[in-house]
Image 1: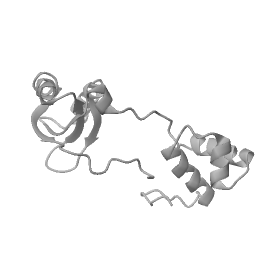
Image 2 (image 1 turned 45 degrees about the vertical axis):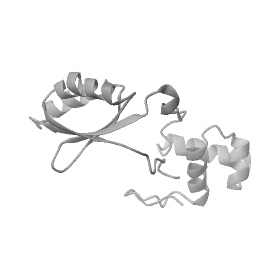
Image 3 (image 1 turned 135 degrees about the horizontal axis):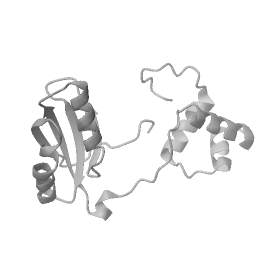
Length: 160
């Protein structure tokens, strides 16, 4: 079952929820395989799948790439505190951070700092260079704090 995440999902019945769970685990599943596992014939299953896409429950499909094989398995979480948090400054920071491929995630945070970044590099040396030459000179960055991940204990998608 889909966990309640704020939005009322009562418009999703058991079939819809099962479709979302299955495609979140294997987006390459054919409609025939999906319909068999959901317990619907192909046409209604395909119709529901398209409706879930059109209504924005399914945002897209992507391949999960192994970062270890690519040599970018060093993960650092970076707290960023800005010197200016007016709307224009936030937008300027947001625009620049979106351009950085090493920044896997960027979240605005309510608390003692302004942003939390998940950064992926090949090693600590590459991270240190990125921090010193790129992250710390982003617009309005006043302070950073880094936390290096030693092991991923849980790393799943929403519906797993």
